[in-house]
Image 1 (cartoon, rainbow, N blue to C red):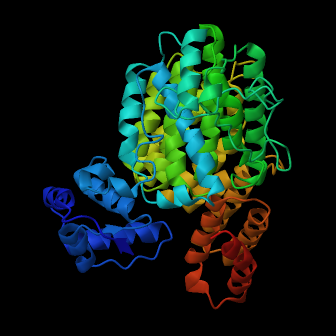
Image 2: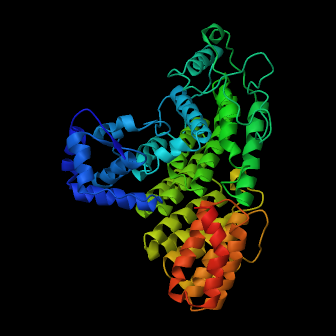
Image 3: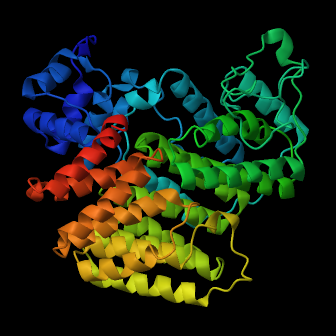
Length: 527
């Protein structure tokens, strides 16, 4: 469906001419991008002619798909206002900015937290309307600014500045980004009472942020943030990491992370703090924000994930935590690679590696090189992937039990290295190597990293299939389906779907038919 605009959309026509895209070509690209996101679109050259000549505005995700299609051809991001479709976007730039100023960084992050809340209360409508707006080029500016300046000179905020931020937040102004400030005097939470994560059934889960009238704005008082406040955020991040690994990013426990950011982290970020406490606060908030992005990525909300990752990188810069910034870049790299932008995935991973030389622990450097290997493998560059894997293994061998590894790296061991190495060789179509590393990755099944175990089983099934072992492939696939059914992870479901696609030539085999039947409930419930 489309709605009328006032006259021709000359901006769209001009950019289409600049990009050298015909009406039919744009319609085809938009339909293809929609199909990649599970949308069935049937635009044609007449549809595009109406957008340009009559100024009709396509609804839903189409404006973002149009911008993505044109941006891919031009090799740069194309904002909606450039193509005359800005009115179609409920939140044009929220979460995509990487401000140079620390105060603006707080505003940008807290605006995103509020947007996600609105999206969840509206049944995910905002993220649905933003479907198709993921653009790997949106990572260019954040990555380059972080590489140039990975640490802000100072982040201390005095009470006067904090007061101004709260006033801006409560009035929905620029300084605070509309995030909730401290609550009123009736016993409502004020941020200092933050706990790990809010749970369903609690009095705060799903609570509406107080929006005081003009008479109460002047009474707003900023929090004085201390180390105990930061520790509670770190405990929340630790809980969230465990839940995500065991239950998947779509589980209700994991979905509490955005609520924690809005209710607990945002008021603290808008408070006052010394430089030392502020660094720790930004670091803890960056960890939680990256986790929110990772969980969105795991559930297929690529647009939300990208925005959270950008804000996490900016918060890591304020924390002066270069390894954490590298970890966010590695997360961006994995997303870019997964989305089919392997070259950009290589760039992002290499940025993490190079900026952390001499700073990060051996285990951390190993993981960054492993992510780089994943991108090289997806790009089909076997020599580069092999070199990166060798480097990752070498760094891992140098690590020691007493190293000061960051808490967020607790998942990474030789088992994880072997699992990712197997995926590299799967992409390089080397089944013997896949089988060798998968056997190592599956040698110690764990109840702690359930999703990873399920993914490894799918990779094992693919390797067995490519080696001509249909029975073993179906057996591993059956185990993978059983694991996938216990968690909420769109990514794991996609792995299972890919396996079933590879098994289509053997569809008449009873073993394959049985596996497909076992997977049916999974594919139906998590589409």
